[in-house]
Length: 391
Image (cartoon, rainbow, N blue to C red; front, side, top):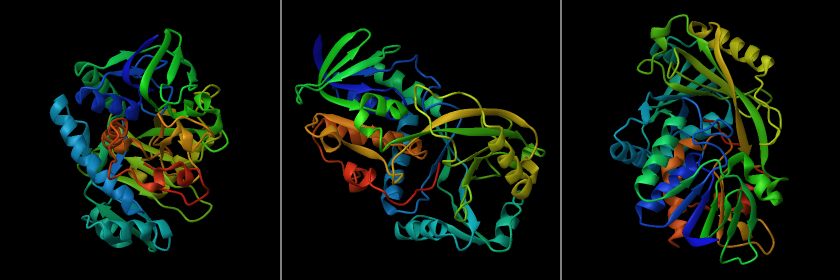
C-alpha cells in the first residue's frame, strides 16, 4: 500500500479537480481518483453550461461567489482559456415572491452592483421577455456562464502539470477509517493511504458514506435546448442568464442564452424524481419537456422552437440546500477528523468551483479559510431549513 500521499481526493468532478489542482500547486503530494474516464456524464460536472452569479439570497454566498470570480479569472490566465463568459443575470418573477426580495437585499447588503426593473422596464431592456404587470426583476451584471466539461478537463490537466497523480477508471471499493489519522481507500487498483482524504463524490457520496443516505437526496433532473425562432436575439451579448422565481407550489425555472448549441437551454430546479447514482436512468422526462416548452411559449416566445437536445443530470441535495463541507466525525459517530466530506451540491455549486478548491486545500493544510462558513457544517446543512435558488 502506498502511504506517500499528503491527500487523496476521491472524485474528479469540478470540486475534486479544483481541490487537487490547488493542493498540487502548493507542492502537496496529491492522488486524484475517479471511477470513470475523466470527464464523464455520470455525475453533475458535465455539459456546456452552468450559471455563474453573485445574486443569492444570503450574503455568505455573495462573498463566496466574489472570491470565485477572482479565481475564475486567475484560472483563465493560467490555462490560457476562457472559462467564464459574462452575460449579466436576471432574477425575475412575481413581485411578492420572498426569494426575489431577499436577492435584492443580499446584493445591496454586499455592495454589489444591481438594478431593479419593473415589468415594463424589463421588457424594454430585454424584449425577448413577456411577463405580467406584477412581475419584477433584479439585474446583476456580474453573472454569466461557465463550461463544466471544459473546466474539469483544464483543472485535471493543470493538477497533473503541478505533479498530482491522477488515476481514472479506478472505483473506490471501501473507505478504511480504522485509524482515524491515516485514512485508506481500497480501490480496484489496490489500497492507497494518506494523511488527509477529501471525498468529493457527488451523488456517489451516500454510497461511500451510508450514514448520509437519509439526508442527502439524489434526483434525476432534465435540461433541454430549444431551437430559438430568432437566434440573434438570444446570443450571450443580448440575453442574460436567468432564474425565474415562482410562487409556492410552482416550479422554479432557470435558463441560458444560446451557448454551446444554437438554442436556449432551460430547466426546472429540483423537480426530478428521486434516484441513486447506481440506479439512475438517462431517460428524459417528456412531461418536463412539455412544461419547459409551455414556459417558453408564455414568457420567451422567440425561444419556443423545437427541442434540439435534452439530457439528464444528477442533483445531490442537502435538506437546507446549503453545501456540506465538514469532517467525517461531524456526520458519523466515532468518525475520522482526517476526512472531509465535500458536497457543494443542491444544483447551485459549480460556479464556486475555484473557491471551493482553495477552501479544501486550506483544510488539508490546517488553515481556517475565511469563507468556510458555519452554514456548510453538518449540523446546519443537514438540518431541515429553507431552500436556495438554482444555478
